[in-house]
Image (cartoon, rainbow, N blue to C red; front, side, top):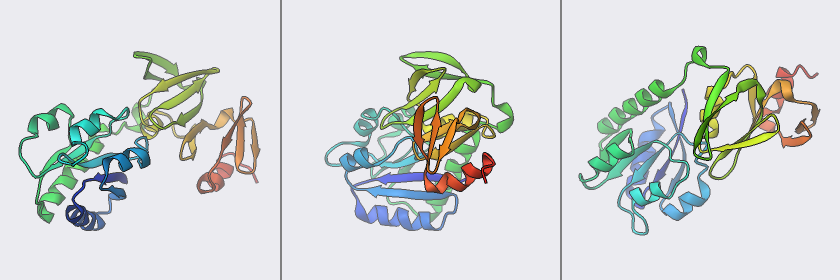
Length: 231
């Protein structure tokens, strides 16, 4: 299991400490450090990260207001110099609550909580269904997995294309991927997942499904050719 996180905290000394602690942990990859919440909003792809280390006291916007501004809300490890955010941590189902300053021993305890959280929420491959439910326009609807052709991550949501219709949901791209049989689906780009059997044409770094062209990142190209048995 490899988890991706970001740190949002205006305290540069604290972020250096957490960055150092994270460098000793194999299971967590630090995707970025943001001292300005506005910058974080513009640069973080919330469909791709697994969780945030989020400071509660920042000059321009506090942590709770920041979470309330998000359409896609990832799990969070709440960080604070105070001990008054316990209720908020409970409301947002925070993975952990870290009170500054944070020792390495306390950080490693938090890492164990983070690992446990994601192990419990991961959907086992054996439990994957041929139907999935997504929330679209405020209503949970059932989609037949085999009908899904293309899944695309936008800035604040994910669009699933099934039988020529588009359905938007606030699930993250990686969460949807884990709901699908990965022998039949593949991520071909940071923003796209496709059902392999629905691919009509492959032209270099571009594929076509039902007349729609989809880019393929070089990172995924050799795997795609191998899985499609293209020589």
